[in-house]
Length: 462
Ligand SMILES: *Cc1c(COP(=O)(O)O)cnc(C)c1O
Image (cartoon, rainbow, N blue to C red):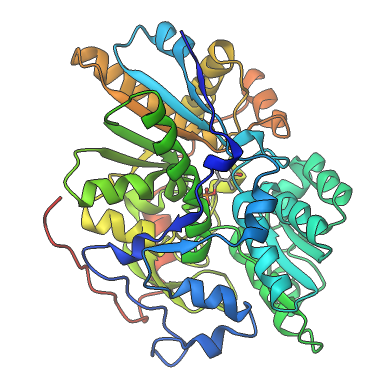
């Protein structure tokens, strides 16, 4: 009755997988303010050129530099678990596996890209990184990575999480990062928002504006911005999760996975697990691929595929993605990492193509599911991850109804030990579900009506 599958350090994948090379319809390019595709040069004040090259790379496989492998090996390969006790509690014929990304020093998948980005920036001669963070996972992951490489790290943390999640700030401090609440008085973008709405809970879109502004206005030229999700190179770095999972499943003789599930904020942990399996699906395998989002921030399930900015102050290029509108401020649910108006263009294109089928779940169902998981498997999951767990339980129950012995794989993107406040409110019965009125979405989308429209490219195969 084995419950864990390990890889040796020398079995860790040596290349990342780039789904952009295999998409049946090509990604549509980011557009600049003039409506033309942005050139790599236009991005160079924001990101180092070596990461920009990765962002636009057409190669299917990209070598992981030895320097990055040396950083990843501190906690990777991560274990693959069989959730036997959850299976028993559900009395399901399904086999449930999860990739445990909570074992990283910061407690989530985010260090996988944080160490890679910090390494590439350092190679390029950069001394300081700025970034935003929602629940604080990304800020702590980047602070950790910067501390390993001797870079300075400045984090703009969404106000509501800054107040609700003080422990993440302390983690950032422990790793030498500097964290301020966003919107802040430190940037023009922050001051502008505060003048209009002093009590704003903040949003990832606002924090991104602040972090980019601070990077591009540093006249020394040695500061760059780092993003924890959404962009192609970030998703690329996360594919080590799915590539490891495939090796682990092969090791125990699992021939086929039927369902792959991950929660989605900007899309990176989902993509990291799912993209290597989407490759199989493109090549003929039958797999249900399910990104799961909060019902209160329903980017993939209720928002259009459109060109929009990634941030409130419109500092980013226009990205072709599912979006609730760059001014959308999601309801203050406790899964801070899933409160983002947009979605990774690569993930959005898999939805347009029908290669993945998104699902939205309310937060009370998610907490209930996370508690069943904690009482069976033991791990207290992050509120973000609880969305994946809720969908896993739905799928396992469906397998039971259909009497099918399905194999379900999901990404345990992080633990919730730093997010117990949300659990506390759940136990005290004060959390509610937020149903987002259609009118709010319509209003928020008015702002992006004047932008160019991306084509809905779809081969119709899936
Ligand atoms: C940040 C975070 C997420 C959401 O971000 P993605 O880029 O969509 O993965 C999900 N789970 C955890 C634990 C996180 O820290």
